[in-house]
Image (cartoon, rainbow, N blue to C red; front, side, top):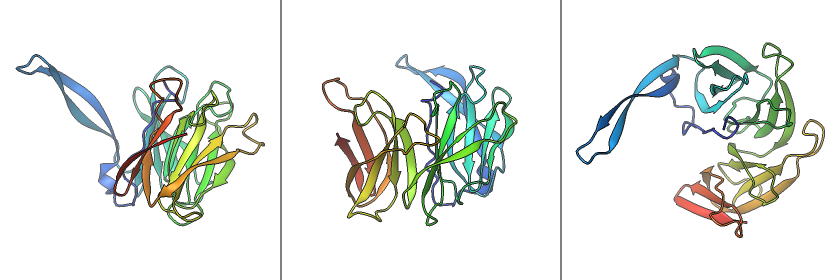
Length: 241
């Protein structure tokens, strides 16, 4: 659950006011409706009023391995994590990437049982770098950054087995097309040694004129390949391998 529970903020163009900060939404109470259903009211709790100029993305993952999901926030030049249950603020990365950081996905990349992060940076026009970071022996040590690749306008990323290999891939979507007639939806295969080996790249699709986000959904029937719904400028499309 900890490596799969992730989402990307829709905030992507740098217009988010500082006072929004990072917020946690918790259920306050249940209210019975006339039809018998129970609706929940949610109360916004501000965790950090000013993590940076902009928070491009947030994710949930058990960073410290205590069984509780922590919160991760991506700002233009730093990555913070907030330790549950008291949301103590800790620095995960301070620099080390090409500004601005823009997207993140938590995943155990090297298979050591601890959460790593995959990070997209260089937003919007500084190279579109893709890298992953691994923690040290303790949470107090700096996280080490390793290069994966680059794609101009890199914008969103998720983990899913879209190639049908039985192993997860890193699926990346840029916002705009630069190397093909359309936007390149990419899948990077996690190598045996992700620190030194090349991450094999597959172009899943290059037909969309713009691509804001994507989801990796399992096929309803195992006889069919996984689906990759893609949100583009004018609507929603579904892609199959």
